[in-house]
Length: 153
Image (cartoon, rainbow, N blue to C red; front, side, top):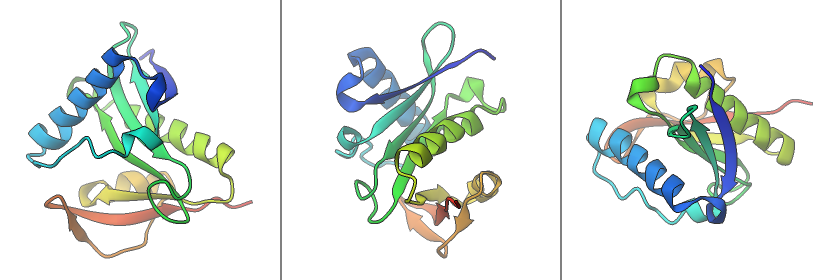
C-alpha cells in the first residue's frame, strides 16, 4: 500500500492533522481498548509526531517520539503507536516504528529508545530489537512492560 510518512513538531501540525490524530488515538486507546484516561497529557507539545497518511492524505497511522529526557530520563521514547483499525494487518505499525527508530538513532545516537509496551505486544517489539527491562505493571488499567532498544556501534 502506498503511504506517506511525515515527522512534524507540534506547532507544525495543521488543525486538521491534530484533530485527526487525537480522534484516532481516542478511537483506539479509549474506545476500542475501553481504557478511560486523559489522552491530551501535555506531552504532545515536546514530541515529534510521526504521521502515516494514505493517498487521500488521511492519517491512518501514528506515533509520537521524544528526545532524551523529554519523556524518560536518559532515553529517547516512542509512544501512542497506533494504526487505524481498517488498515491493520498490513505491516504498517512496523513501518511507523522503523521510521521512528531510524529518526531517533540518527538524531540521538548515544541514547536507547524506551517504551511502555502493552504486554500483548511484547513479541512485536522484540521483533524490532527491544528487550524487556521490567516486570509487568498496570498503566491506565492495562498490563504493560518497560522495554528498551539499545544501539550498538
